[in-house]
Length: 410
Image (tube, rainbow, N blue to C red; front, top):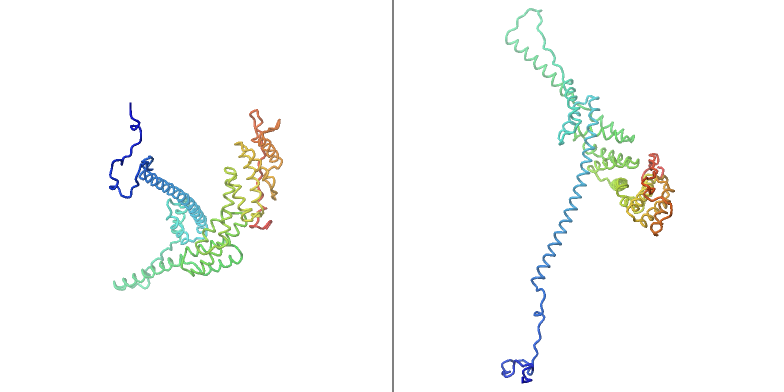
């Protein structure tokens, strides 16, 4: 029979001299496992995981930064390309004017500038042969050498003959040189006076062209005054374009003016014009973003009368388009809200049929509640038998309603 002492816990220190273990309690001792012996990942594993997480976060940040930079470069490149293309078009149009006026020097200067572009503008193919012909026609004809007379019949000595021929040649060369030098001379003072008159009569586009000619002929001629007048003409013309609704042209001219001075308020005009053009461009393809951009102009910037209230006309149409887009994907509750927003606007001119939008709003409301009205026409215009009902097309906005920023009818 096994003794009961065999199953009892044993003291590992029993029979040992406890004096060999200072500062240790006497009596029975119980062994307890430490946390380190329980198990789980160690410090090295957690360190590796942490380093991997930091590395992954850094990669994501770098990728986002690179994507944003690429987007910015694309936008800047597109703006620069548009500005250069506009300048090239202007120079090509003015070459015909130079040809009609016989301004061979200014024409040559324009051709040299355009030849610096790669690829060369297409208009050079047409104008270079004309410019060559104009140059050849402008060359002076040589003055004929004097002929010897038979009376008196005197035979000149070889020395006298040499002197006569040298004098005749020198006279001819002087006439040719004088004619060539006067061929390309311009009265820059008269051109400057003409530009001043054009500015005073608010003919800003004509003043820009005249000052362009002065700069092309001699960029150092009264440079400070010419550049100041040119800046004035550019900013005034850009303002006129913005207020007449020609926003794209105004943006281009503003970019040119920026190189000559502080454009101040024109920078804000350009900002609003760019928002408006972007919103119009997205009105069909991305009506939700179009609504946001039009709302920024009308409400965030407080310009509900922008272009004589045309911004509110466009916003109403964008709301209606957004409602149609949401209905097509089954978002009837959101579509109903967009239709309500469109009906809540009362612009001076409307491009939508209010009864049509009201009907679509009601159908979307029923669908949002889970009830489809009997015999109703679906929002997308289909009749249920495969045919599609015609939808009214928006009418074009009359150009006569366009007015300066924030001033109705102006």
